[in-house]
Structures are given as structure tokens and as C-alpha cells.
Amino acid sequence: MSAATAPLLGQDLSALTHWMESQGQPAYRGKQLHQWIYQKGANSLGNITVFSKEWRSSVADIQIGRSQVQHRSVAPDGTIKYLLTLADGQVIETVGIPSDQRLTVCVSTQVGCAMACSFCATGKGGFFRNLKAHEIIDQVLTVQSDFGQRVSHVVLMGLGEPMANLDEVLPALRCLNTDVGIGQRSMTLSTVGIPGKIEELANHHLQITLAVSLHAPNQLLREQLIPTAVNYSIEGLLDDCREYVRVTGRRLSFEYILLAGVNDKADMAMELASRLRGFQSHVNLIPYNAIDEADYQRPNRQQVQKFAQVLEQQRIAVSVRYSKGLGADAACGQLRTAKRTTEKESPIQKSSLLP
Ligand code: SAH
Image 1: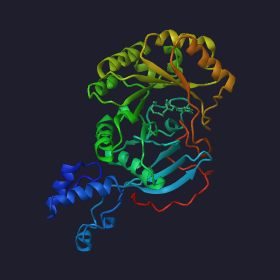
Image 2 (image 1 turned 120 degrees about the horizontal axis):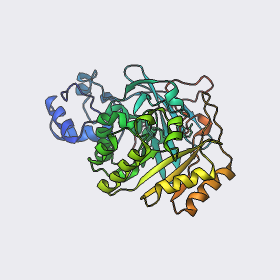
Image 3 (image 1 turned 180 degrees about the horizontal axis):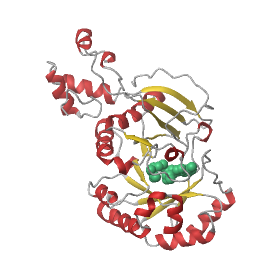
Image 4 (image 1 turned 90 degrees about the vertical axis):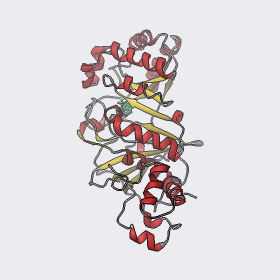
């Protein structure tokens, strides 16, 4: 695709400079455009006031590639969930999670999800399409503008399976790193595991963190929870994870959702520990967040602690992640493509340009 037809969002400094030159502008204007798109969060060329009014009106029909905020809901803990309308009318969710000095964005990589995990709201609605790189980057810039604060961390844990869309996810991560300025080590890609993809990612030698949604200590239970696990043995998955650590030199984390009476018993923690023994990894326990379409239960705090203790005693690094955003259906697993009718409207702040 030529620079003229590709959205400006996602293009690096040299591509933007070429584009400005193709519009009869001097090269330094490319640097200004880059700064206004990625640092100031401009959502249309008409808002870039360093350019002459005359020139801005001559390019009025050229889009930067930003989405529209259709709705935002604020959870009691300050987490904000946004519904974004894309150019083709599809709607996705993205979440801004403030904590201490951090601002984390939970980014979607697809409209819907084809993985159909039994406990996840996204998969219940089916799969529509992959997101384009600029639609992924846009989510981060939207949260950054709305909070008026730099985004420090990006987690690919919103709608979709990032490994099923690596062709768009990788350029988006590159842009977030070099153009927006977010460190690779502050980015996490979460995957349920797709054969061949962990190896493919490893070969890019990125410094991002890989999180693998394991959720079960054995193949039988994993297949009950995750339909796509039938195509990927747990042994094969863990071998690929070991190879990922060897090739990239990065530690890896495993996510383990805790479902009461299903995968949260002490003997399962023991089984998990023996699977992961000697593995350079960290286990994140995620107590289940309720969704309407599944009748799993969240284990009580005592059961969660007991599971964590067994892992600790077996010298497995572990932490418990109580998801933020519960009051706004913005927690892990609660994201979906359509707006829930129970959600309360809250006014959309005019997205402010960052200083
Ligand atoms: N497709 C990616 C990203 C999904 S969301 C993946 O599977 O890893 C990120 C995490 O939230 C995953 O570990 C996912 O399994 C978990 N999750 C999904 N539904 C959940 C729920 N209802 N409660 C808690 N965590 C959930």
C-alpha cells in the first residue's frame, strides 16, 4: 500500500516525512506531523495548528486513522473502559488502568475472538475480523489523551487472540515502541497458544513479556476449558515456551484462571508445580471474573491463597491478580464487542491534546 493510501497512523518518521514531501511540504514538516500524531494525540490534520489553514483545508479529506469514542464507563477503582467505533462501524473495547505512577492500556487485537474459551465473554460473541495496526495503536493514544497522562504499559489482553493477528500486532508494537515511546519491556502479549506462533514471535527477538494462558495443569482439563487446546498438546506448548525463553533470554509468565471446584484444588497446584519445575517463569493466578454466559464460580480468598501457597512451597514464583475494572465490566474476560444494556452512560470527555 502506498504511503498516500495507508492511514498516517502507524507510519514512522521517515514515511511521514516522505508523505509530507509528496504533498509539496518541506521535510521538517514530517517531524512536526510525527510529533502531533504520536505525542500530542492529534486526531485530524485539521487540528494541527502548526500547519497553515490553507494547507490543512487542502488535505481535509485525509484521515489520520483514529477511531471515535462511542462510550466510556468508569469503574469505582478508576479504571475506564472505552467503546470505540472503527471506520467500518465495528465496535471494540479498550481499557485504561491507572495505578500508582502507571497507566496501563489493555488493548484489543481483534474484533471478537475465535478461540471460544469457556469462561471468556469475548469468545461467546464469535469472531468478526482482525484489527489493523493503526486500530491497535489508536487505542493507546485514545487512553493517553483521555487521561492526559503518558501510557507506561501496554498489555495485549483485550478482545482477541494476538498470535492470530501477528502481521498487524508486530508493526503496532514497533510503532508503540519507537514512535509513541513505550518501552518493549513494558509490553505484554498474552496468548492461549497457537501452534508455531510462539516460535515465530521468538524469532523477532523482542524484549516484550510473553504471557501464556495455561489455566490447567494437564491436557484433559485444559481441553475442557479451552476448545482450541485439542490442537496443541500441553507438552508441546511448554516445550515451545522453554525454547522462547532460550531464544529471547526473557522470562515468561503463565496465567492461570481460578475456577471454583474446577481447577483450584491443592492437588492441581501440585501438578502445576511439577509441570513448571525448573522453568524460568512466573505464575499469575486470576480469580475468575463472572460473566453471564458461563456458570463458573470464583473461589473464595482462602482457596485462592491456599493454591498460591502450594505453588510457593514448591518454589514456583506466583502472584494473585485480582482484576481491576470489575464495576464497569472491564475486567479480564468481561470484554465483548457489543455494549451491554445495563451500562450507565458517562460523558465522553473531549479528547484533549497532550502538552
Ligand atoms: N487471547 C489472549 C488474551 C485474552 S485476555 C489469551 O487467551 O491469553 C487475557 C487473560 O484473561 C487470559 O489469560 C484469559 O484467559 C483471561 N480471562 C478470560 N476470561 C476470564 C474471566 N472470565 N475471568 C478472569 N480471567 C479471564
